[in-house]
Length: 214
Image 1: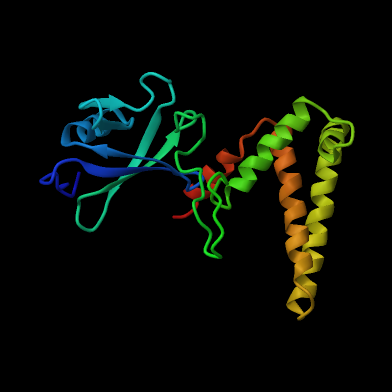
Image 2 (image 1 turned 30 degrees about the vertical axis):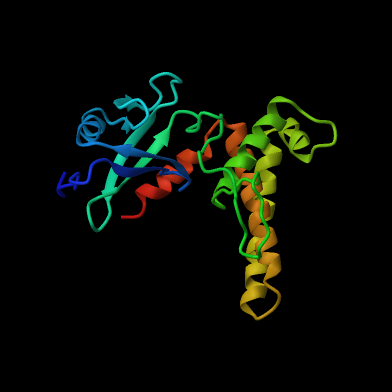
C-alpha cells in the first residue's frame, strides 16, 4: 500500500461498504496481519477481539466479502473496504449489520425500522419483479406485464420515454415538474422489468456506469 497504516495503538476499525449500492455492510477490526491477508487474497480478513485470532469473513457461512479497493482515513488509523458481498453480511441474515434505525431527527424512535441507502429501492424493486415473474399474482400489473412478453415491455419503454420527454419540455417552460418525476419513475420501472425478463442483474448496469466515470 502507498500509505503506511498506523497500527501503533493496536487494532484499527475497518468498514466494509458495498461498492454497488453504497450500503455499509459491517464494522470489524484489522490487524497488520489480517490486512496483509486481505491484500494478498482479495477477500476481507479481520481480527476477532473475542476469539483473539484472524478470521476470513464467510469462512463458516460462505458469505464472503470480495474487496476491490481499500481506503484509509487522513490519520491512517482506520480503513474502508469497497467490496462486493456474496451473501448477507450480518449473521442475522440481513444484508447489512446496520439495519436498525435508533432515532429520527424529529425525535421519534424506531428501534426496528431498517435504514438503507435510497439506491436500494431499485434493487428491492428488482427482487419484487423477479418474484412477480416467477410467482405470478392475479392482480399484479407486473405479473401481467411479464406474461405479455418482450414486445409489450418494449412498447411500454417506448411509450414512457416519449412521455418523459414531453413532460421535460413542459417543465423547462416553467410548468409543473412533478410529472417529470412520475414519468421518470415509470420509465425506470419498465427498464427494470426488461432487465428482469432478460435475466440481467441491475448491478451489471451500475458496474457499466461506474466504468464510464473516466
